[in-house]
Image (cartoon, rainbow, N blue to C red):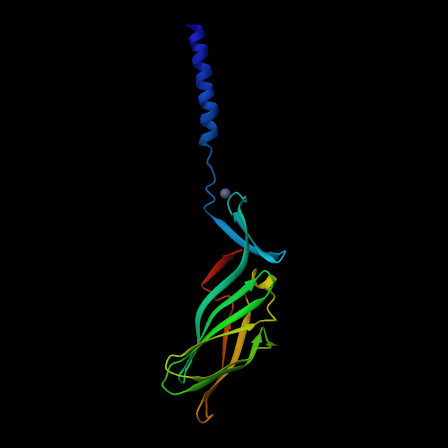
Length: 193
Ligand SMILES: [Zn+2]
């Protein structure tokens, strides 16, 4: 009888040993933060758990696309949308605009000047003879935005000065400036390398 009690105690203790280990709350890593850095000509992605601070995953990307789809201009038969900003492992930063003609009359759209945080960026966007929903994708390299810094903080004030002219008689229809911040993106798309 005493031996049976001893065996029973050992069994109970074992159950407790395993049971106690299991009852400890296991972190589900439900709450994570993602950071990116450029190194070795590629973009490294780190996902870290905010609760237990463990690295949940690590991967290498070839390109990051910050998607904006933000309408900047809709005026005098021209629509200009900021589509995206792309960053690659070579530290190239590219800004993509879509320019669309919205009237039956031919229009010319030009971005003559762009300022980033008050400094003039060397870009020139020029699209002529736009009409009847014809679209044009315009890509420009940004030299004042450093890829290594942009993937950490996108807080850049941008101003573009644009002109819309009648393609037939060169009459100026609009000459304005528009301001936006590069932190107004709606999503980030990742391209695996
Ligand atoms: Zn965790």
